[in-house]
Image (cartoon, rainbow, N blue to C red; front, side, top):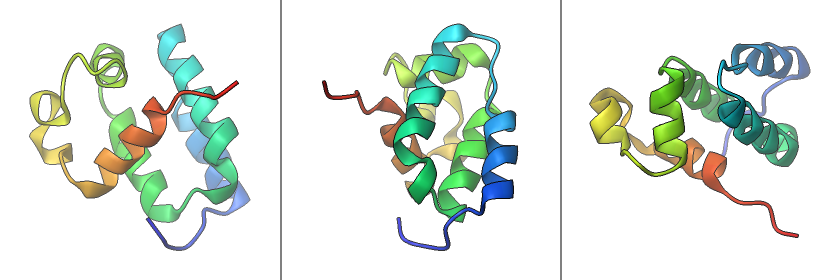
Length: 94
């Protein structure tokens, strides 16, 4: 996804918005920001924000591939959100 990069203030707000009640989600999101915060686009931030509207359990089910976007929220099952979800799922390499 190419586009305008997120500015520092918007990134800070997004990080605050992404705080979760489940530690497992927080760890996955922290890893996401470590890897992508310098290259996050506005469109990607909007997709991530849409994912943050989900419940903690639904979000974890998506992270762990126990459910699909279509099962959790069909309205979110589109390119931008799918791309960000895949970015969230990427494992760190040693």
